[in-house]
Length: 131
Image 1 (cartoon, helix red, strand yellow):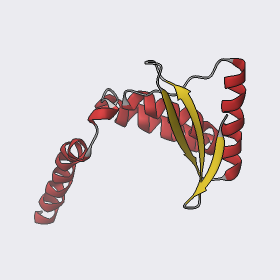
Image 2 (cartoon, helix red, strand yellow):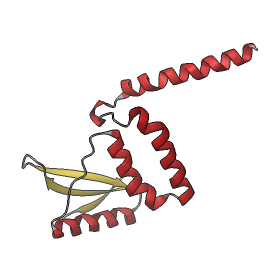
Image 3 (spheres, rainbow, N blue to C red):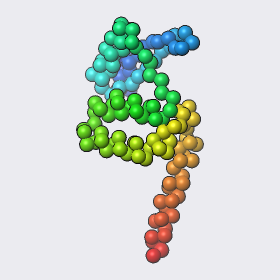
């Protein structure tokens, strides 16, 4: 059985599941609107009743982004926005950091990725001013 709780203006769907070790765990999923939360609650309860409920377990950034686009993008983005975002993700994000494990992504990881890009952009701007 799932429940909905409002916190800080957002809605949480709370449910319990049993992990692969047989331990009972609680999962919280956050949604912007009550309608989205109700839809997810009904989906969870239906899948549990049918015996087909599986807790989402993303291990890499590629898996997480793919799941996000499937769940959020298809529902909320216009067709042109969807196509543009999927192209940007597939051409620029996934080739560079798609294989990164979610457990390894932290502030240091992001800094190591973006500082060289920032320095390159600044260097080009300084060179252009000098011409």
